[in-house]
Amino acid sequence: PRWRLQWEIIRVSVPLGIGDWIEASGFMVFFLIVGRLGETALAANNIGVQIIHLLALPGFAAGIAASTYVGRYLGANAPDLAQAAVLRTLALATAYMGGSGLLLAVFGRQIAGLFSPDPGVVGLAMQVFIVMAAFEALDAVGLVLRSALAGGGGTRRPPPPPYADQR
Image (cartoon, rainbow, N blue to C red):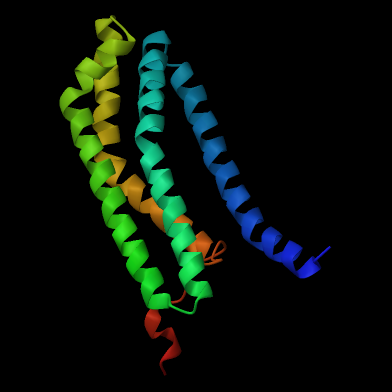
């Protein structure tokens, strides 16, 4: 076994895994709370979860692209290209997911109606969609930047500011 490589894999993946576990645990607690609010609230929440999973897929893909480019360009000792790739990927993902959020806010009632004919569920789902629309662009930023940091090996803390080396 190549122990140094094994250590590098563990060093990068364990903090990412812990972060994913914390996020999944937070969702579990949230769903337990929503489930106690009643069937209508749970049904509206489930519609929101299905839609958010669909809308987040391009953000995850953009994050993977950013991670790949960062690793590639940093490995080639081209940090300027890595930064440019992240900024372009970030702009694309933010525009896409922000636009998706706007469409969700505008056509949310029709989308929710595809899942349930119950006006109570559709009304609550529309409220969920408004909240989702507000954070879609921010979610893109989080997905891309988290992945870009991981691509550069920074899974424990963000890198120092660019002026940190200049004294």
